[in-house]
Amino acid sequence: MMCLYRLLFLPALLLALPYYLLRMWRRGGYRKDFQHRLGRFHRLPSPSAKVRRFWLQAVSVGEVLAIGPLIDALQAHGDVEIVLTTTTSTGYAEARKRYSETVLAIGLFPLDFWLFSRWAWQRIQPDAVLLTESELWPEHLHQAQCHKVPAFLINARLSDRSYRRYQKLRPLAQGLIHKLEHVFTASEPDQARFLELGAESARTTCTGNIKFDVPLPALLTEPERQRLHEALGFPEGDAILLGSSTWPGEEACLIRTQQALLQSGIACSLLLVPRHAERGDEIAQLLKQQPLSWQQRSKGSTSAHSVRIHLADTTGELTQLSQLADLAFIGKSLPPNNGGQTPIEAAGLGIPLLMGPHMNNFKSVASSLLAAGAACSVTDADDLQRECQRLLSDAKVRTDMQHAAQAWYQSNQGSSQQIADCIRAKREPRKQV
Image 1 (cartoon, rainbow, N blue to C red):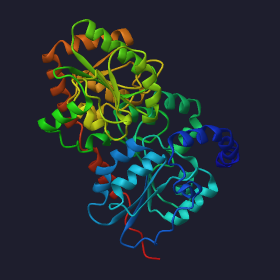
Image 2 (cartoon, rainbow, N blue to C red; image 1 turned 180 degrees about the vertical axis):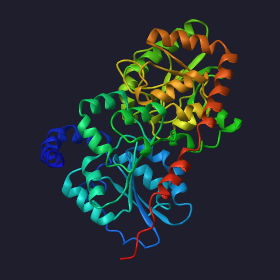
Image 3 (cartoon, rainbow, N blue to C red; image 1 turned 90 degrees about the vertical axis):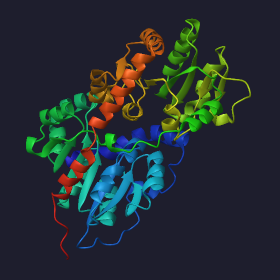
């Protein structure tokens, strides 16, 4: 199987190269330390006999943010050092910003070609490797097996799409899963899927989602909220509808929803925070075609007159901006989009939530939120309008949803420490050679 994978990898990479080059050009940042992707990681000192070296791979910004409590738990006793890698340039930048003083080294994950992977392994020399969510790289896991190094999958989850794909390629899925020392799943449905694909029950544990353990930022004080509200230019007294991490098509739905709310007598401002800030100018073209006053955050300060729509096409501000919201719609969940963005932080902040029908990447989280009464599901754009009108007309219902969301968030914490304890118990420190 590995011979076939190695044989097909380079042709597949060449076919996919135009797509990745285009994405690199659009998002930028891919040039920095590009040699890491070829396995040319900076050479590290040989690990001490008393310290275990863990290679932790987190794909993008979301995973990079989520692993903070796990890193702290693993290193709490001073006998573990961590080499952290990411796949995306944005994840790499966030990792360097957050963990440069915490971990031994930070780099970019190598392309999963045998030569690149082998070079990276020679330089990093890990005692264990930790992969996040659905990161099952065949060459990386093969290198772990060859080096007799345990591999762990943490916060493991399988989207509907990935699950169907692995069902069709069951021998491949079983081969990859059997190379894992332990699978720590984010939910019970994910655990059931891994078991169905061939994971051993003794080496598969549902520990919950580590994203619940990420400390929420300090809440804005009332004066800070007021200053931010004024900076966005919204009229005093307006309810604020947030489009959180929206994808193409969803901004247009929210713009129509706001117009319907205003026509029904509900004073409402719209705060759009797209998932990808580089879509700002594209969304601005939509805003030019509607009658309400609006502002694009990346273009500078708010004009003197009040605005009814603020396009926050910037990065790193979602958490702060979310705290102004009376109601939030979670993006990538209305057709034709599929998968959903994470609703966890918004729920922790106590924001009543609306989600489209396609939260496949967070299916168990979404189901749990709905069951807890912290969120409502909408089927399409018309349903979105109806639910927004219902919820923004009833402050008591929103208050009940707020309390339910905060209670739900608190009840799901603690998985990072549990995972760290299990991993630390799996292997003794390396012996001196």
